[in-house]
Each structure stands twice: as C-alpha cells, then as structure tokens.
Image (cartoon, rainbow, N blue to C red; front, side, top):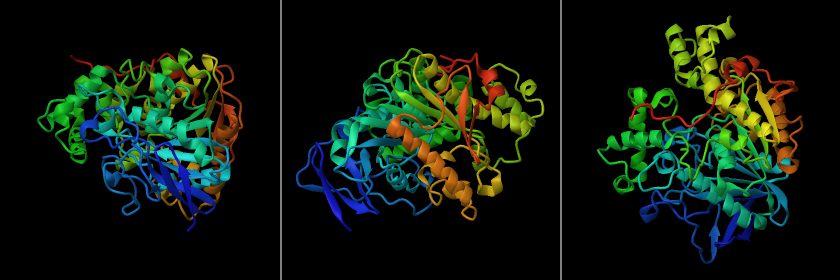
Length: 498
C-alpha cells in the first residue's frame, strides 16, 4: 500500500493511499487532557521528531463503548491521546474546499473513527478534503465544574478547527473554504460554534442536521455535576473529580442518568430527556444561546444549511422498545413537560396518543429548534437553506419512518455500519442509493459553492428542500407545529429550585 508524508506544524505524519484517496488517521491536535491538563482547555500538541505514522484512529474519548457501534466494528488505538484529527484528501498537492465533520451522540457518546463516518464517498464524490476529529464528552467535556472552564468539548472543537486553519493546506485543503457539518449533538455543537467568539473566522459555511434545543444555564449545569459527583461521594470540583480515572468516571454519569427522573423537581425538562449533558450558556465560552446569537447577527456572514427529519423521535421510542406501547398517560405527561403552551390535541385532532407523544418530543427536541435557527439567521440578514428529510426508512419494516439519525448513513453512504443496518434494509438499496447520492451531492455542492441547490429560506415563502423519492421544494411542511411554537423562546434551561 502506497504511503505519503505531510509536514504539519507539529511534525511529519505519514498516511496511506486507499482507493484513490490519501488518508491520515489519529493526528494529535492537542495534548492528552489528563494529569495536570485534566478538565482544562486544550493545549496544542507538542512537536515530535521523525515521521509519525497516521494509519490508525486515535482512542475514543471516555464513554460507554458499547454504544459506539456493532461489536467488533471499531478499530482504534488505546491510551489517553483522545484529541486527534483524521483527514481524507484526493490530492495533498491540491487546493480543495474542506468539510469538517462533528459527530453526535447526546454529548456523551461518539467517536470520529466509527465506521459510520467513513468519509471516502464524500471526499471522492465531492472532490473535497474531509476532516473529522474527537472531542471530550460527558463529564470530561460538558459538565460545569468548579475551577474548570465551561464547555471543554466545544473548546476542543475550536482547537481542532484551529488545527485545520494552520495545517490543512499541506493536505490539499483551502483554509479559507472550510464548512463545519454536524448531526444531532454535532449539530448542537455547530449551532454553538456559530455563537462562540473564539470560533469566529474558523469556518465559512455550516450545516446543522437535527439541532437539539437543549442548552443549560450555569446553575443547572452545576447542579447536574453535583449529582454526578455525589454518586462517588465527591465534591463537584476539579480536585475531587480528578482523583477518579476518566474511564471510571463515566460510570458515575451513567449511574446518575439511570435515576435522573428523581431530579425532575429541580431540573425540569432535562430530567425527562435523553441526556444530562449539553452545552452551558456560561457567558464566556458560550455568551448566549445560538438562537439569540443568530438573531443578533453573530453569524450573518456564515452561509448555513439547517434541517431536520420528519419523524425524529421515533428512533428513541423504538430503541426503548416502546413502539406500539405509548398510551394516554404517556402522551399527557409529554404534553405537560414539553408542550409550548398551545393545544396539541386541538391542532392535531386526528392524532392518537402515541402520535401526540412523538410529535411533541420531536418538536421540542429537534424540529422546532432547527427551524428557529434558520428563521433567526434569515431575519438577521444571513443566508439559510432549510430542508426536511421525509423518506420512509426501509429498516424494521418501515416502522421507523424518517427518524432521527437516518441522514447519517445517507450522507456517508454507510448502510452497513453504525445506524445503517437498523435504518436501511440491505435487500432494498435502490431508493437509498439514489437518495444518498442526492443528499451527499447537495452537501458537497454547498461546501464548494455555498449553494445546495434550492432557494434560501425566508419567512414569507418558507421554502424548504424535502428529501424523499422524489425530492421537491415546497413551503415548510410542518406548518401546524410551526404555529404552535412561533411564540416560544429557546433559552438556556434553568435550575427550577435553588
């Protein structure tokens, strides 16, 4: 297998030529965040002598490894060098647009080396340089800890983007043509980066797929950390938490999450949600919520594609084994906890209890926060392109609909990895292949030109690209939900009791 050396600011790395692309894996962009660097902002990677082989993905950040993919599907190094980047390039001597992928996983799971994020199809089909990277998760990356900077996982992302700015030209990329792309928590990170002063100027365009609306106040973030630390009889401080190995500390987060509902009186909606981890609107690293920042014009010069899937929450209902089991009491609780104040029953008079349960979860968690991001960007004079994925996934006999996560295997064309086998039936690939090519083509065109192939969103026509077979441009399809939520403000979630 042919090999290729590239000189970075920290030293020379050696990649391999794979199917016409040169691929580099596991390049450090920051020092391992352990020991004296634990819970601190990332420090630049130290220089090395000689040639460093970049053949293997760096180790995943500490988390529940069983949630990363199919057993045996992950090949990665061991150790503490979590903060690494990977590069796929058609030609290290070129000057191509750059797509930077930010994985999702509820801010507590994820790994850039997941087979579901194999970027060869994007790099080859779009003639792009593609970068992915790891960032700290869970307690290490997203807890509010006394004596530590907030949003360390987001600071890792800024450090990775600074690495791209300083080094990507050596891999054939154009540092002035960088687009960040993320899904789920990765889309929440994209939204946060749009609002962060430290990220300004590090990217020209952004794609946010299924933006979660959960951002925390500092008080709520600190209370969550206190509850996690209490699982180990520790104080929520750097000094105490640093006494526990990072890989063992994830267990305290899992233990607290298993009984998170007991905190409902103090944490409100977070206690009923999928994860206790989320970015904290701390006033410094993240000065305000993404919606407020975009409304104030913070990202007016950044071109934005933003969208969601029609049946977002159905994936989580299925994973919980609750398909066909949601009753009237479940719907009543969901409407009381998440409803924006409007009457869902009157707005959807023919909807069953299960449908109302799914709708309000989907709207609160992903659909309406995503729509609002496009609205605020457009209202502030920026360009936003809105989409909705409505294709009926072929997995599980079609029961999942256009659920959360379906866009991932379609974008990467990884039908046999990560969520792909669950969502896309390998016996019926023709529609998936065609839609995957359409989806990927829109993204790569946007990265290269700023135009994904449909009109920009405005609040008069509200035109969106619907991805289906066939695809079409129509006024925003979820008009009933839009009206229910139009007076709602997506703010930092508060601590309900002091």
